[in-house]
Image 1 (cartoon, rainbow, N blue to C red):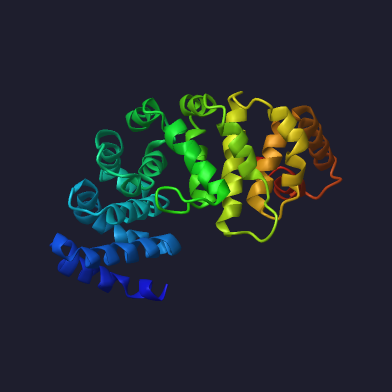
Image 2 (spheres, helix red, strand yellow; image 1 turned 120 degrees about the vertical axis):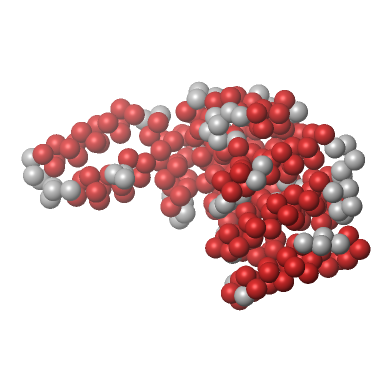
Length: 307
């Protein structure tokens, strides 16, 4: 964060002395500069907009250049993955996905290290709705060849394409795809997906490896909830009965909120009776005005809270 205070000056220096020239004869210097940007993007989302001006003249040229090392290309894609969390629209306008799709689908000479998490970035940027970009990935079996191995490595704490993926980023791939019925169907077509997501929701013994793992568990649970809403979660009733009660007792409010929404979807009659009881209490003035609507309902059923 201290570096971020001066990063506008650092970025200007990078642009004029390193990036504008993009001199491949000074590859170690270029790799160090990109790695610094990647680290800043990972820990300081508020600095992402300072990095956007570097995407087209630097990141896309690195991705498409045969002179770039695998390490440099991989770090550049990791940088884009971090940026996609907050400046996705800007990256879509720069057509970042086109360069990444060409790398993943049309280039057989690039090693896994150089591909990094390119598929994730495309999904983050375009996967919420059915689109040409993600259709191309699905046709190339992105679920079986990328999404499943990514989550398996994440849950084992194993290396994947030269990095150790965080649960939050891996689970987000599934959460984005599960929003669309077409891509949700593609997910469940692979029998490994639902068991992996169920495993990802579980609390592991010992200290939390990363604080973001809690957000990752929430995203995995959101993926399962989306699949269930489309009727694509076999065994959902059993999961709600056996696993959701423990999730309702979690300390993480996001996990609890998704868990209660999933539970409510299988207990609609009970939820309706509670809502009618509360409405009756309020109508007969046994509760102060607004308490039921603005205090009790958000506490019991966060997904029904007034906007």
